[in-house]
Length: 134
Image (tube, rainbow, N blue to C red; front, side, top):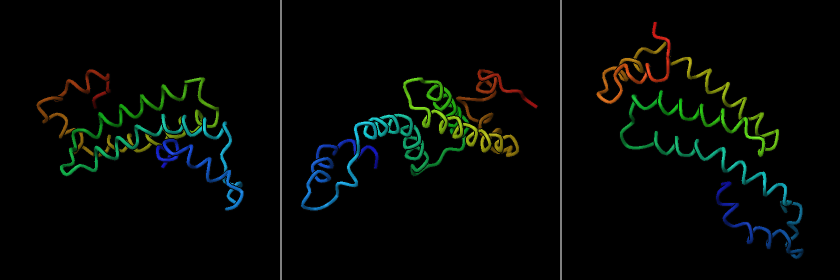
């Protein structure tokens, strides 16, 4: 939706500026358009993850690595001073929420077993990210 709005900004501005249809109250300011650009940047990774996990063959071994990628994305963007404070705060909150669910993988041995049995990962993935093994 955000991508669509940004792609059709000129058309949306033209419609909301047309006084004959009385949609002026929905017109976005330049600051709001800039905020949409920032939102698109930070939300893109979630769309990518949704598309990835919606594929025809879900892959249990990809859950932990994808969560790690999202976590790094949230962390780096939360420290990006070019984003407005509200977005940075939302990113921090999003990272806390993500980690809450990430921690649940510690109690579901199936994720770890799948990773260890996968020829690409084995135990090396956990060693590379310095994960404490129990």
